[in-house]
Image 1 (cartoon, rainbow, N blue to C red):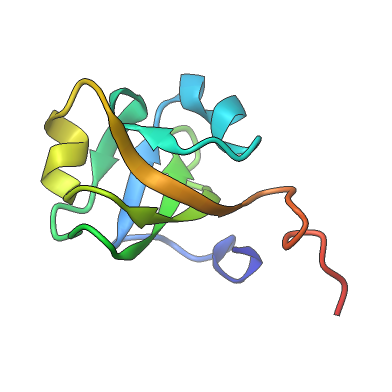
Image 2 (cartoon, one colour):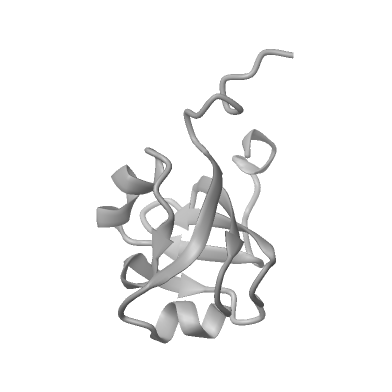
Length: 95
């Protein structure tokens, strides 16, 4: 995740609203109602980056459970399994 912090994310992303941020950075999976935009080419099972809508900064890396189009259209249900997020044990790993 640190490797993409300073990069512009233009594909394989899902953008979450401000209300979802606190949940995402505590490790919660991402629900469809919190997603405001997504790469429409995403298919279930792909590794994707979760970004926040204010500054387009990455918050998490996850596995898509549904397509990018479904992420945008659905108003309920889980969309992304959260694997790694800002501040978790991987983020703080010292190499």
